[in-house]
Amino acid sequence: MKAKIFVAAIAVASFVGCGSANASSVLITITSDTNPTLAFVMALNPHPGRIDPGYGFGWNNWEVTVNGSPAGLDAIAFFPDSNGGGLNDGIYFNYPDPGLAGLLGPQLYSGTEANPTFSLGSFAEIYSPDGNTFYNATVTITTATPLPAALPLFASGIGAMGLAAWRRKKKAKPAS
Image 1 (cartoon, rainbow, N blue to C red):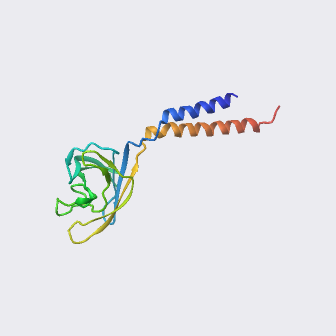
Image 2: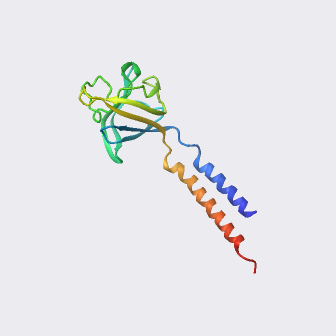
Image 3: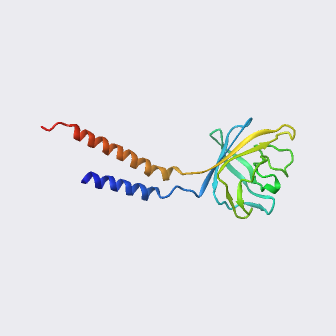
């Protein structure tokens, strides 16, 4: 009986400690034919630092990781389909015309430039560092679950496995 109460307490603690998966942020990962992998976390419904209605939205000085190492971008901007779609990071995909998106492809958000919501999924994009040769890139946008939200669930699983092992060991002992 005590074991059942203990397991129930672990389950309740994991749900309370974990809450819901944090769907308020997204992980954006960019992989390409020629450039290293770029990744960064943003709010699902961001509040842009720059807004150009009908043209796009973005921020200056954005922190990212490149192949797992911290780095910074001078700027990052997202564009609607009417302006080529995709995104431009200001440096990473050096498109010669700053009026065009560095990664051309589908629009990566819904809503307006002032109130965007990122679309989840994997998106095929193209880019051209010289304006003549084109390369493929993939932008993947997934929900980001922060580590603190995952730890209580992990701890409850370890606790439940420990309890099961303890009970098995207790049952396996011969009666003296």
